[in-house]
Image (cartoon, rainbow, N blue to C red; front, top):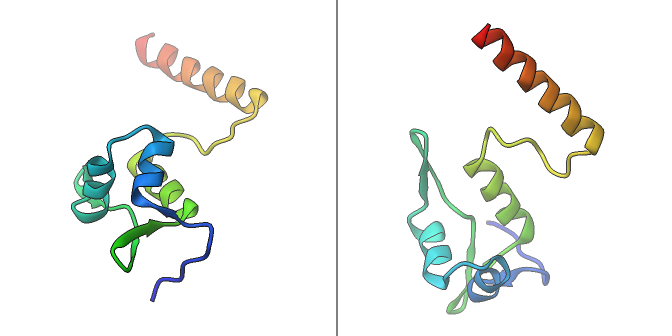
Length: 95
């Protein structure tokens, strides 16, 4: 059984906070989205007639949908190092 605490948001509240349509978030919960060759769904719990979503469940969904994205927040120094490494890799590939 998935536990839920009082900080959970309803589906319409989450949709409004992130600027998406309510049906988009509903589809993430019920159908999921395809990332690469796997299906990723937003974890949610029905409480009465409402879907409730914990903040960390939404964060995990975003991470699962963007596996190549670095973990946030990224410090300015870490960003510089990552960009320099990417630049060096591209330069090595292109010659």
